[in-house]
Length: 203
Image 1 (spheres, rainbow, N blue to C red):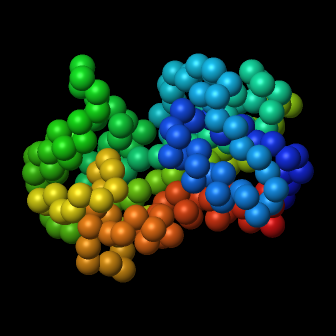
Image 2 (image 1 turned 120 degrees about the vertical axis):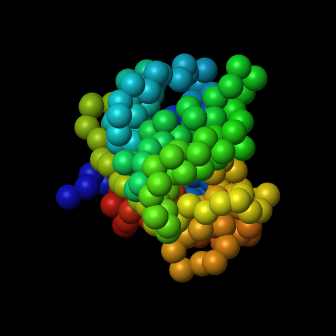
Image 3 (image 1 turned 90 degrees about the horizontal axis):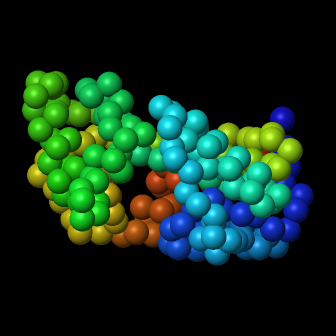
């Protein structure tokens, strides 16, 4: 059984203001105040694991130890079946350049990798999100969500971010990049993980 969250303050181990706002809105009905890692000047620990859960654990436990607060962290990415799950935990790394992240370059790299693999279409893939809630005593709870779909080419749509323009979720005929962001947020891998988190810790 998952340990219930009984406090009134949760640290979200992210420096992403948009993600912080999203989580704060999600937890508003439970009278939980949310504070971000940037607000507390916490460093971003190096993500050295090879799984989403492993990297989320690093961030959540580091934040909980540093502050004495329960801490929530996530790690997410795109896993393509024909590429043996790549880019996976390296989803953002594929976009890194000396001038910052370039996701158009990353999507082109992924497309070239699929061409080189000669894998038949459809190119099945999943957006994955793993949440870890860590307590200062070292215990944690893990919640994994995913949105299955397929990778397409060329890129379509200018909504969303990251690899959204080349991913069509199951049950739809448009990419995340063409989808209204509220609709995307309702069905996404992150929404799946958060629903499990809320059910497990607040339900």
